[in-house]
Image 1 (spheres, rainbow, N blue to C red):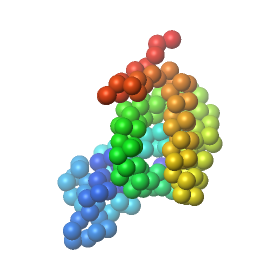
Image 2: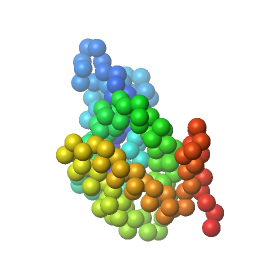
Image 3: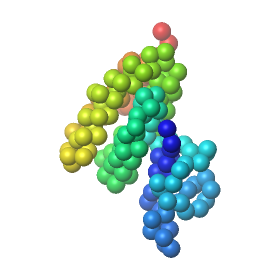
Length: 167
């Protein structure tokens, strides 16, 4: 899979160049680049679980999924204070879940389930403008993955705590 700059957590899609509005700030190189440029080797995936599923399954439509979810999070969720906590939890839980997925012996099976029960339905709901439903579907998928991989996320604390359960 080829990463694009818009996939990277180091690209600030809220900071466009005043000289060329089609370029956005890269926190690694401290320069402005077009978001659809090929990502460098320093890229940090922003949509952890979606990226993991797309990589594991080598999906042809991965760019469309990642761009849609990235735009949705940037333009809808990050601009709504009601989702700040959910996004901060995802920034903690997402890397743990994606790491579990990559290292799992059943990664293809789990990725297919996540794709069919979470990513595709949420993607379609975003396309239909049913934002709240899309969020519910994606959150449900994440909770199922947490249960499957034995990840405990304590959502009640002010700062969410995530740890791997020992079996």
